[in-house]
Image (tube, rainbow, N blue to C red; front, top):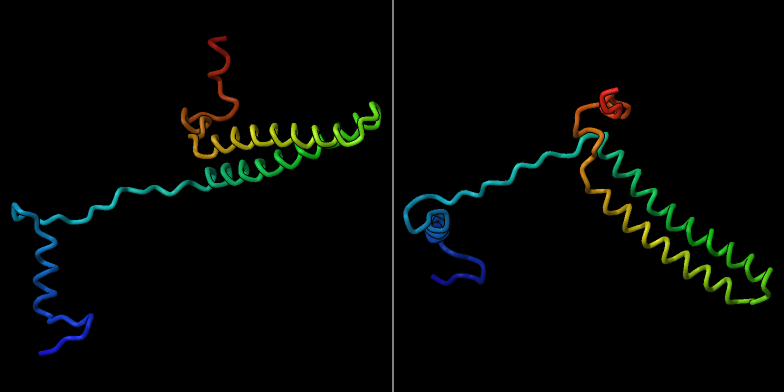
Length: 127
């Protein structure tokens, strides 16, 4: 019998499937998925808030430093250099803050770890 490229006899396919499920000692190696707990709604809101703040902080730091550089150009008369240094310094500050905030996105939420509220009595140190 002549087979096409992807055609195989059914009994060979069944033999191959059963052979791949058993190991050399005769036990079956079943795929066991790792447990996955989806984040809670509060955790999703926290992460999305941090993601929004990353963009706002980056944009805001560049614009703020650009404004300071523009004012430095007006006061000192160094026409393009205050503006350029403001953009560069604002970008550096923005990237530092961007990576600082992005490291907090997948960090555990410390307010829910102790099971207490944000204003818990643990902050009083026994007073």
